[in-house]
Length: 291
Image (cartoon, rainbow, N blue to C red):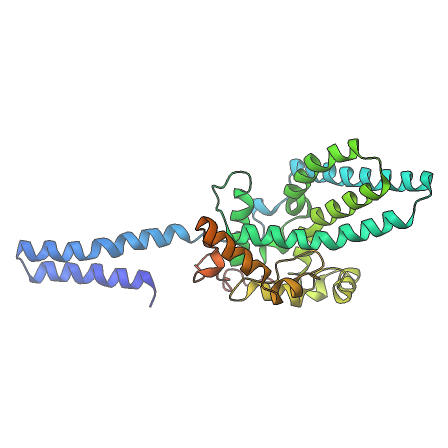
């Protein structure tokens, strides 16, 4: 039974009691019995967010979003260009290639650690990370929204972080091997949200090259990431290629980290609790959402 019908029933029955029992003392007792459920109902209402519509302005790209994305892409390209130029002049080719491959592999691990952290800790008021934490909680309820976000809208937050962290490295580093790692790692992290969006896409609507890369395991697959959105919501966090998911989940790496944080600081992860309304996917919000 839902909360609202219960509240409606209690409130109606209280009025009936007041009419049939004129005794003032009895009426007051009936009134007090409905105060607590009424307050609980208000609290539950505040917890339930409103689903955005497909044409919601919050899903559209702005010129600010595009500017940050251009800045992030430029920063990554500078690192890769400097690496290729330096490797050509120094005749060092194998090391930068291997370093770039390592950056790609470790970026998947990095995306998983970050995803695990914002899924389980903090809230909308958390400094710096609050907006992303809040967005990821909404994503669990309405996963389809990520497929409706325009390109720059989806990537601008990470592009801004990449700009501020990688640009100083571009200016300081001159070693082709180091630059190859920085460019590969930061580029994959910045585009991880797009890989994430493709993992929620419908196969028939995705570009063929994307589907091929997903099937090859180069990008995180739709089937693998779908497991993350099923109870108990505590696995398959990596969203670049997903190659780390099996190792991390089978060895319960994140569960060990959660235990350490709990016994050291007394902080419980969200995955330990019964999923709230914000974690349960709403299948009835939009009839045209991806199937």
